Image (cartoon, rainbow, N blue to C red; front, side, top):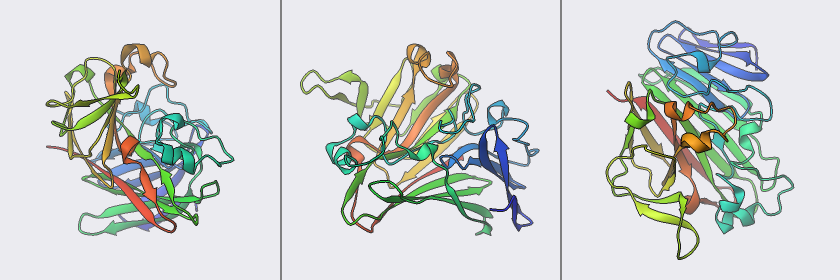
Length: 321
């Protein structure tokens, strides 16, 4: 793509460099966003008539108006996902060994290592198109693509839609194989909070979840529990909820709404004190200022995709008032 693309007087996209990584800086009068080409990773979004930021001089973790959390220790290096924003977990979520047998079978003949959270997050995506002034809300749309060159051959298209109300991210996977493929995925969204102990997530009352920190004494797997009331944080949390309700996140300073489509699983994560010391690009006290709400097709919700078919997973993030 050219260094700068001007789609209309209302919105532009410019190619910039953050550390060693190429990024796209999308600017409009009412919002600004930054997407890394490595991993098609959104690392900054903010709306409102605020001064635009020069992210070649100021990294997103040093900007207070970011809707997303980015670690102060984030590294913008090749072959390593940046800690923060919205990394893509694709075509597997989590540890490969913890995926359903159908997913493991689909990738057993892969010539590449199937690393934790898959390989998409360290791949360079191709720029497909940028358009703006879509609809009455003057939405801008950025489309990036990763063409299947590994076995099994899956194409991934990532569509970002931005306007002054928020952002939508859609992952569309197409199966290019002659046989059915099973895969898992997630939009691993990091969100900020002023105090994790004063943060609650609404929408999951009565929803069953797998607690990955607790082992079931009967079958040796993860314990299945039922959420009672809102989700709060008093220690490490690593749960896969078997549902994708409309979510309200309330922090001491902000309220967010998250709406998923094409998903029936949601991962909620905070590493807390002990695990925070083991996480890369992460300060020991960062757990106090972040949480992850991951829109997913994970665990029992893995996708079965027949030859030639497509599947879309999307997240809409907005601020609740």
